[in-house]
Image (cartoon, rainbow, N blue to C red):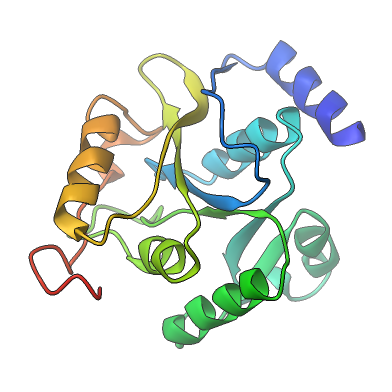
Length: 194
């Protein structure tokens, strides 16, 4: 209730507008946040999920959870990530889902530090291994909108699934467009086991 009120207050004073498509009502899934080119994207996605009343969790580098920021990051739904062991992270999230924990996991498969060749594929592996749907969240500087777009389920054909994701993000521009990375996984064109 408080989070929803805070989100509505944010959208009232923000130059950004929230626009979301309906999402499946099962209360769990992967929310991709892209283009992720600024730390402000975090604030926008929090406001989106809070206004929609979604129980969301997000992945953050372990250093964000150290010191006085730690309790705040955990209260906001953060899960600390050991970047030296990304496979362990996927296994941990899959185990949480299989144990019955229900939440929307917000994942930003590209970083804020600059353009890269590929997106990280953890979001796809988690969705495939748990059967969770992927909802495409977005920030679009050109229209000053942020929200949730379509939801899809991984088909096992990585390239075809990524074609659908690329089509959605083709006209979206991040806060720092020069730092955006085209939605492409290194595993495209390889065996579907990602």
